[in-house]
Every structure is written in structure tokens, then in C-alpha cells.
Amino acid sequence: MELDRYGLGRVVGEKGVLPQRAQKLDPSLPLRPGELLIDVDALNIDAASFKQIKDATGGVPEKMIGLIREIVATRGKMQNPVTGSGGMLIGRVREVDARHPAHGVLRPGDRIATLVSLSLTPLVMDEVKAIHPDIDRVDITGHAILFATGLYAKLPADMPETLALAALDVCGAPALVARYVKPGMTVAVLGSGKSGALCLAQAKRNLGGNGKLLALDISEKALETLSGLGLCDEALRVDATNAVETMERVAQATGGALCDLVVNCASVPQTEMASILSVKDGGTVIFFSMATSFTAAALGAEGVGKDVQMIVGNGYVPGHADLTLDLLRAEPKLRRHFEERYA
Ligand SMILES: NC(=O)c1ccc[n+]([C@@H]2O[C@H](COP(=O)([O-])OP(=O)(O)OC[C@H]3O[C@@H](n4cnc5c(N)ncnc54)[C@H](OP(=O)(O)O)[C@@H]3O)[C@@H](O)[C@H]2O)c1
Image (cartoon, rainbow, N blue to C red):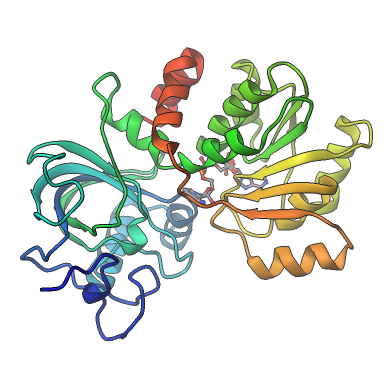
């Protein structure tokens, strides 16, 4: 059998369509050339997807489990049909095909986290053992398949798996911040949840005491926590779906100058314009949020005549997993916050 690097052969009924865009994947065994088989322990469902599932089921755990099971049974992957997003998983390696790049590197029983989205990962869910609504996690038994191009990280021995899982889920965000934040900048992070906290911590390191760091969120509690950890110079409580109000608060906090960079880490839709209006002309917005609409961002920026560089928050940045785990190691307060809140 020919090597199928992108898993095209796992797509059901849509020729030439990549697994991420496919309606349905075939997660059946046996393993095919170039694939890696994982016994799954837990899914970390993407924040935008989990919130949608919670809202659609009234937050009743049994109903949430029912909807998740239905999605996986119908699609052969955990891709929310409304948000289109997935998440990632942790589990144990069961088998590595001889033509998978991890052959000879990973051994059966090794514990890994996938770093590609669940939205393209063939998945069979045998049993749901528990759901943790506060941390977007579902403990399951089942199997998943990683293609030859599928990224993964070996779980570190010096921290609990649940902590690593929580951080690795959003590890692209601080890695992008590391790339774009330079000393002297004014930076705002919109959404002070999991990815927001990591972005703030990384931005603070990049600024090195030279610049200004704003945390924006709708939740007073989240802001209090991050301020308490010393992760921002100023915390602004805003509803980012209200773009003008958000811009006014940012303008106030920056003496009218606005920001060089805004990182959008919000879990809700319609926050594009709050981000765009809060940067200076010629500034940059990184849209990490999965609830971002390309149309709203592109037409919105045009509509207000704003020359702004807009970056789609690619979940993959070389070295992103190590950078994020090292950030937790280097920042004990941040690590404690993650252990208490997400692990
Ligand atoms: N690009 C990628 O590769 C990638 C990978 C993983 C995740 N993501 C996306 O990144 C985003 C953030 O993920 P996360 O895990 O950091 O989520 P999270 O922990 O839920 O944080 C999101 C934060 O946004 C806040 N928020 C909600 N509505 C808001 C509003 N109207 N105005 C201001 N803030 C608001 C939330 O407050 P409350 O808690 O009070 O609601 C929360 O603090 C999600 O959209 C997720 O899908 C992207």
C-alpha cells in the first residue's frame, strides 16, 4: 500500500478532501502504512467547541457526553460541526507502523499528547469515563490514529499529565507571542483564560520590563487572578463583543496611543473588531481564537480604514511544545495557577 502522509484514504466519500475538512473519517483498524495507533485516555476539547456543546445542552453533563458521543460516532473524529474546531488528546502508543517517522523513536506504552487537532484525527470512543466541565476535558477509552505528518509530544516526566495536556492544547499561542513581541511594545491579550495566561507570561519575558502589557477579559475573576500573578501591568474588564467600548478602554489605558500588538484568545465569536480597533495603524493582531471569522476581520478592518497586519494563529510553530512546557517550568506561579485551575 502507498504511503498516505495526509490521511486522504481515511476520508469517507469525498475524493481529494483533506481529513480536517472531511465530513467523516474512517477510524477502523488495522493500521495502514505510515500511521501510529494510540490508546486514548483523555480528550481536551477545544474551548470554543466545548462552550458551544455546553450551551447547546444546558450544561447537563449526561447531555454533553451524549452530544460528544454522537459527534464522534457520526464523524469518526471529534470535530464540532458548529465551530469546526477539535482539541487534542493524550494516550499511550499501541503500535507504530514501520513507515511512520516515530518508528524506532516511540515504543508501545509511551505516553504522548497529539499536537494536531482532533478535527482531523480518526477516533473511536468505546467508553466515556468522566467529563470535567470546568476544564473542557473528557476521560475516555478508545483509539485514535495519527498520520505520518501528525505532530505529537512525549509527555514530560516532571509534571502531571493533566497539566501538560492543558498547556500543550494551546502551545501555539505563546510560541507566536515569542515570535512577535519585541521590547518597547504595547501589547494587549484579549481573553485571560488558558492561552491568554501563557501569552501574557511569554509577552512579559519578551518585553523584559520595557513596554506595556494589558490583560482584557469579561471575567473579573480571571483578571484578578492574572493580576495577582503579576502577569500584566493593567487589567481591563471588557466585553470584547462590544468593539468601541473595548477600544475606548484600551485608548484610556495607553494614553490614546493604542497597542502595537493584540493577541485575541477569546472563546466567543464577534470579538474581531475589538482587536482591530485596539491596535495602532500599522499594528498587528494575532487571531488565535477559533471563533474568529475571516470575513468579519477582513471586511471589518477595511470598513474602518485600518491598516493592520492580521495573523491567523497557526497552532503549529516549530518548538511550540517545548517552549510552553519550559514556560511553565520557569514560572512557578503560572504553573501553580495552571495546576489549580486546569490540571
Ligand atoms: N489557533 C489555534 O491553534 C488554537 C488552539 C487551541 C485553542 N484555540 C482557541 O483559542 C481560544 C482561547 O482558548 P482558551 O483555551 O484559552 O480558552 P479559555 O481558557 O476559555 O479562555 C477564553 C477567555 O475568553 C473570555 N471571554 C469570553 N467571552 C468574552 C468576551 N465577550 N469578552 C472578553 N473576554 C471573553 C473567557 O471568559 P469567561 O471564562 O468568563 O467566559 C475566558 O477567560 C479559543 O477560541 C480556542 O478555540 C486556538
